[in-house]
Each structure stands twice: as C-alpha cells, then as structure tokens.
Amino acid sequence: MNLQVATGAIRAITGDALVVTATRKGDNVQLSTAASEIDALFEGLLTERSTDGEFKAGSGELLTLYPQGRLKVKRVLVVGLGKQENITTQTLRRNSAIAARHLQKSGAHTITLALSWDGIDNAQAAQAQVEGALLGLYNFRNYQSKEQNAAVNTLSVLASQDQEQAIEQAIRTAEALAAGTNFARDLVNEPPNVLTPEEMAKRAQAMAQRVGLECEIFEKEKIEQLGMGGLLAVSQGSVLPPRFIVLRHRGSDSGKQLTLVGKGITFDTGGISLKPAADMDKMKGDMGGAAAVLGAMHAIGTLKPAINVTALVPTCENMPSGSSYHPGDIVRISNGKTIEINNTDAEGRLILADALSYAVKEGLSPIVDLATLTGAMVVALGGINTGIFSNDKELTDAIIAAGKLAGEKYWPMPMDEEYGELIKSEIADIKQTGGRQAGSITAAKILEHFVGDSKWAHLDIAGSSFSDKKSYQEQGATGVGVRTLVNLAHDLAK
Ligand code: BES
Ligand code: ZN
Ligand code: ZN
Image (cartoon, rainbow, N blue to C red; front, side, top):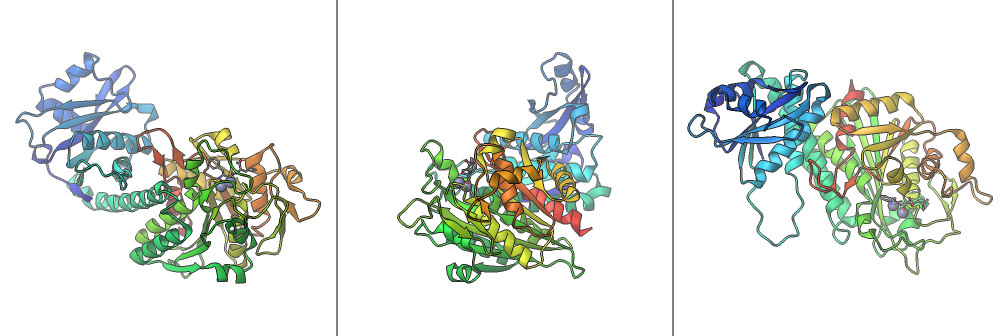
C-alpha cells in the first residue's frame, strides 16, 4: 500500500475517490471544512440533501457525489460521523474503515482521506483514519481460487502544508500499528493444519529478522531441560512438538522494560476432556494471545520505542491420543509448583504458567499476558470488552489508557483472595480448575501463582479476539491487543 500526504487544493486531487465528513449537531448536519468546500463547488447540493433529510450524517452513513467536471477526482464520498458529542478517534477509525471498504468494493484503487473533526488533533485524526482504512481493507482470501478484485493500492491523507511533517509521522505510526494488527489477524485466521507450533516459530523468526528483533526458538529438548512441565504435558498428546519462542527488542540502556506473554495453542480439541464438535473449528484461534504478542512485536520492531521489550510465546496443540495427559495427572511447572489436572481442556493456564515462571526467573517486570483463556470470559463480557486481571492498579490503568488510544476496551475484573479457595488441592500445590463458579477469575488466580513479585496483568481475550460478524472489519480475527500493547510500550518508555 502506498501511503502519503496530500497537501494541494481539493480541486487538484486526482484518483478514484475523496472521502470527507459531516457530523450531527442536534437535528442539523454540520459539514467539515473540506465538505463545505465540496458543497460550494456543487452549488449547495450537500446542504440541500441534508435539509431534505436524505443525508443525516449518522455514524457510518454514506453519500456519493459525482463531480462531472467540477473536480479532478472521480467520486466524493461523504461519510457521517454521527452525533458530535460522541465523536472520538475510534469514530474516525471506524468510519474510515467503512468508507475504504465501500470504495474498494466498488472498484476504487486510489483514495484520498479527509476525515476530520474539530475536537481531534490533526495528527491523531490522520493516524486514526489511516489505521481504520488499513484495518478495514484487510481480508483473508489466500485460500480462495476465485480471482480477487484488484484492491486499493494508494491512500493519501489531506493536510495543510505546515502540518505535512506531523501528518507524515502519524501515517508511519498508523502503518506500523495496522501492519502489526493484520499480522496477528493472519496468524489467527490461518487454519491449524498450516499454522502449527513449528510454523508459528518460523513466522516469528522471519518477522524478527525483517524488523530487527532478537529471536530464540526453544525446541523440545531445551523445553525439557528447562523443566517446562506444563507445556510438555499439554503437547504430549500431539504428534507435533511444542516450541517456546523468545523475541527481544532492545531500545533502552536505562533498565526500562516490558514483557509480553501469549497463549499459543494452535488447536484446542480439549484433549481427553474433549470439546463438543459444534464450533470446535473456532479453536484454531486459541493462539490469539500469541498472535497479539507477535503482532505487537512486529510494530515495536518497526517503531523502536525506548524500552526493552521481551516476548515469550509457548506454543503447542491440545490433542486427544494414547499419549495425552490425563485428568488426574499431577504436572510440575518450571518454578517447581505442582498442579493437579482435573480437566485437560484447561490447558492454557499450564503453558502460561511455564512462560510466566520463565519471565520471573529472568527478573522481568511488568509482565502482560494475553490469552483466549476461558469460555466464561465470552459469557461475561462478550466481544466488546477484554477482561483485565492484575496485581497492580497502576499497570491496569496504563493498559486501559493505552487501549482507549487504540480503540480497544478493557474492563477490570476482581481478584479477591477468597477466589483462591476454589483452586485448593488435597494432593498437589493447586488444582487446575475451580469448577463452574467464576471460571475466568479462578483461571487468573492459577496464573497469579506463577508471577512471583513481578507486576502483572492478564488479559483474557477469549471473547474479543474473534468476531463472527462483519463490523467495520472483516469477520474473523480482530487482532485485539496489538495496538494496546504497542501504545503501552510507548507509554512505559516515557
Ligand atoms: N480455549 C479455551 C477457552 C475459549 C473458549 C476460548 C471459547 C475462546 C472461545 C480454553 O482452553 C478452555 O477450553 N477453557 C475451559 C476451562 C474449563 C475447563 C475450566 C472453558 O472455558 O470451558
Ligand atoms: Zn481448552
Ligand atoms: Zn484453550
């Protein structure tokens, strides 16, 4: 994709389409500066369409104008941003995505974006609309034989000359954030016969090389040496060997750091505690946490914030077979603690326990882990909010703020000591699951046993990482977490 700043007059813009905005103020439509200019060139056509009530500037509402000689550009698309009091950068991101998708479907290749709102700084607006367009235009069609329509190949952002540099910078940031998000979406959307633990490691390694990160891949022998009993137990039912991926971005000599951990189950059948057949195919996405961490590292490698960031990704398959781990097994995690297995479908916490223990042993803090960990999270918050479970209020607040900037929502969940009662075991240090009550919290309480004194937050993305419905993005993987993590790294680098 060619991304650039356009600084000329509106009349000088060429290409297939120009996107401008209008907002809703009370019962009236208010045009942006660019839209007013268009309106004047069209002798008040836009004002007329609004007063007639044909165009109400509701969020996502579209109106197409054909210049017929008034402009060089072939089409003008007016997109509504909705009520003024509700407009945020996420409104621009969403509506840019809607506009870009609409234009791509109707054959546009070169688009100029002029989405703006008085309440949002121009550089932030530029970043949001480029992110939105790139996220909206994403699709996953690698496996369809049918010839695809030619895609949008050039996006320009309209800006005044004195702001050219700031806008250029914002576009580069947006490009990195969207590329990281779409990298994660590809990993989640890939089928499980392609994206095996080995393949994930290969892609991580290739990506690290491309953007300049250090990369180490631990194979089974090394995982055994490290005593990662959780990762070994879960993977032992599969013919595919596990991997443990370590990536490092070195951006600081002053000791600033952040560690990211992602659950990388490339397919979750449940193991001996087998899942029902319906919707089991969705469990190809059980590596959404790993994907988010790798996607964030893709962007972090590109943007190079002044902080050291370590990424840890344990990855394997959870399969039923003659060599699977059993309910009743006692598994020893690499920090020495034992877990009594009572449901082999609660595999994520076992592989995360080993990764968290590894981080603690390396003296790493703060740690943020992301995982499609529990079905109970989907029930509690659906796809709208991601649950945060943490031992540190400041880190929680920083993640929520980073998410807001990214257009991703997080909701803090309770971690009271009393929940720990539910995972007491008679024969091991802890029990793997605590039964039906508070399933997402007891899962987080298990993880808490492995974070030592490190500051830590666990993000359960089971509901938010995959969407069955088309929204402003294609259905499938959402890439949730990527942009939040990159924003968090920048925030902690300050
Ligand atoms: N990968 C699943 C959680 C999940 C469910 C993610 C739905 C996305 C959508 C996880 O490994 C799992 O199966 N958890 C069990 C835990 C239970 C056995 C305590 C669950 O949530 O049912
Ligand atoms: Zn499971
Ligand atoms: Zn799982």
